[in-house]
Length: 317
Image (cartoon, rainbow, N blue to C red; front, side, top):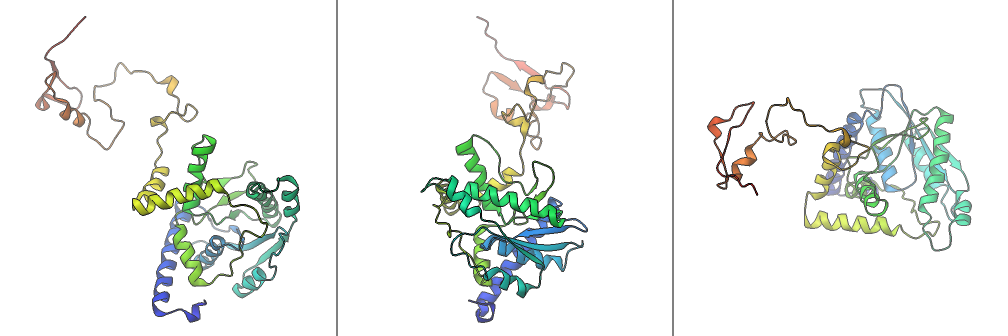
């Protein structure tokens, strides 16, 4: 399929998806200050649908953005058997964007270190990341753009929760451990199903990530299936999960590193207003439901500083 052979209905759908992705990418960039004036953004292109879509949207936004920035595309040929070396250069030549094709035989390293039948994705990605980080510094890139989307971020949170005992995901913007690179994920607000449909309509020359013969990451596949089931059974749940990830409250959790619970002390001079942890709820409104005969709450006697409570009965053993 190519854009020239699309039906009128498909063209309408493509335009709608493109506008949605542009809006979401633009919002993510603005919200997290991903791209600034004069940045050189190294766009990592793997040959998968996500990185193609990211590059396509960034090229489009570059022409309309309120700031000037440069795009440099980088692909790492890891020497998997059967890797089609001609596809990406031909595609990038058609876009007329500067690019580099790197070659590093990480495939042999992975096959040497990982037992047969075990998933190779973790080591492969670490080796790839190290190579790309080093090259970004070499060409003076100020940002490294990766094609992870909203579903990747949510899946990673559940993977860490279920299998690593950690509540963390992929941040839309990340400073590398050595402080030398800033990683951005412009697709952080975008849904995988939108990206997949967009890639199909755009007819990107997809290179499958199964050339090395590794098994699919079964844990991630299971989490993906769980989320897919939730999305079908409870429409809007995935959106709510992502919104929750943007609205964390350390004081309402149990992580002693994120909040100093040990130092919490009662303030003897504090006015009595009740629990105002939920700041959007009026103090004491929930007590209106608690008038069971043991406590008489007289709303007319409440003030902003105190609440008069008449004790009806008391029992002392």
